[in-house]
Length: 443
Image: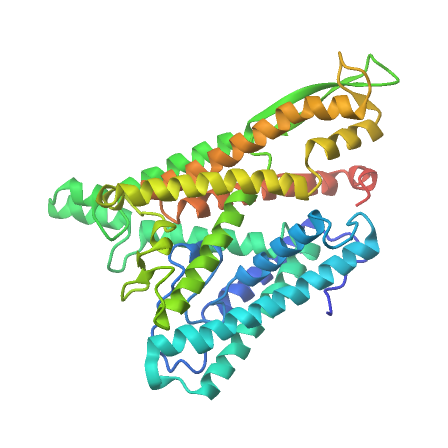
């Protein structure tokens, strides 16, 4: 597939900001363009709060959001990591092939999901309003939207900051938090509702615990989750190292507490999202083996109901079994995905031991042997990976239980992405101020 050309010169800090802003603007415009063929009908999203995480905007060109691209990326990473596809991503030609196949797979997944919407979900929502011609046209529109996001992501990756996928996630979650907190329209956001309650002399209980709309308890929960996530991002375990040939030279190998970052919660989200999508389409066709939905598209029973997070303390109190099931499922999946991810992406103890050995480093007090180093590293990396995965899953679930705005998963992704962007922007600023630093790192 065609690709965005790699810049042949250094892209300045200002230019990166411009290209990043341009890509975000195009995405936001496309998220407001309604699908032709729906006849202006209001579309109910079956993704629930996952629409924030996957930048999905119901009834628009961005209906699928980044879902197909993330799904394709995960599939390719797993295929390469498990050696089913024999590619070495350190080789430029293999890396180019990997990128091309991943883009093609994203388009295929996008067309498949678009057809499921156009021929499965939309006709069930609107009945006889949609014709076969409308469904084909909608499939094409959604596929074009996926391709557009694909190239916007590539544009940001090469000419902007971070990646387009990360940018769109942050934009979607941030917009959701802002609207839920400050919306002046009914139902009022949490802060305007608090102001109205104070002015009218109403009880503060409604402002903090109202049901079915954002409340101040959710605002405080959001703030607390942000602080916890930021602190967790900075936590790390440091393993002492020494240079083999010069024992006096010491160093440390940092292992972040969130060693797999927020990847586990993304993978769990993709799994839940696809189960929900498939269950919704099956339910519309009369099959309820995965669950049932109410008239607003929310899970009402079955497996999909128990894999959907209760949003707010009132829903937790109404069905504690659902809350416990979701919490356990998310924590177990995040632990499993964290372990799987580090072993599939050359972050496992064996890979790290080989990297340190090639660098001439060893762990003081142990003989220089890859097997010994791997054994020592495994005691740290395995435990930290599993604990970090469990922590990120539990924090995401608890944020939803306490009604955090933008969803717990969305907040964690936003914090992780912004943390990474901050580090990248800081490096770019240093390289702008000191060109010698950029030349040293090959920029």
